[in-house]
Image (cartoon, each protein chain N blue to C red):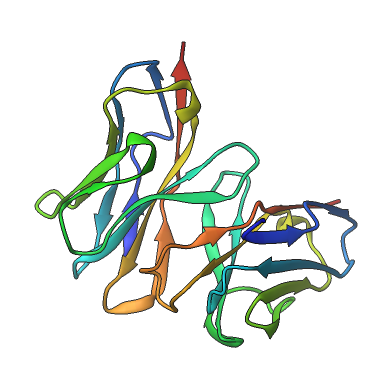
Amino acid sequence: DTAVSQTPKYLVTQMGNDKSIKCEQNLGHDTMYWYKQDSKKFLKIMFSYNNKELIINETVPNRFSPKSPDKAHLNLHINSLELGDSAVYFCASSQGAGFTDTQYFGPGTRLTVL
Amino acid sequence: AQSVTQLGSHVSVSEGALVLLRCNYSSSVPPYLFWYVQYPNQGLQLLLKYTSAATLVKGINGFEAEFKKSETSFHLTKPSAHMSDAAEYFCAVSDQNNFNKFYFGSGTKLNVKP
């Protein structure tokens, strides 16, 4: 069983489109995260949810909107896609809300905006 | 403010040689420190973490790291490299007093030569 899964694995789309990436964890964790990894492999946290509540919202354009229907799912919706949004997006989960707990990462979604 | 610096974006070693990947942090308080590994086209996986217990931390796959407060370092080592160790390695830091802050270093790509 995959602990943290993301769909789709690859996403190619045109500028201006709206797209969503889904994430599910079956670890029973309370906290989920979204990270963006750019072309230089730099990883930056975007959002964190604990028990469906937003607890971290870094400086991210408001075109990005996370949604957590339950604590096992954290989806990322992106409006009006731009070229600079091209990156690999990783979902992760951990038991606790702080970053002291081990984070388990999904396989990533490679988003390419043309 | 927290930050983490990884010296050397690329490190190349021969199979069987010592692996040393460098990580330095800046923090006003003792941090929590982590090493994650990313194999090609996969998500990140925790290797080990330091959370203010023993300064020498042993992780998976024969890796270990030592927290040295005087040097503000948390270098990752492995006595004998294996071909399967070829991957990208990320050091990360979290603030004990502000668990909402978490920063990854820029990563070090380890190449293992036969």
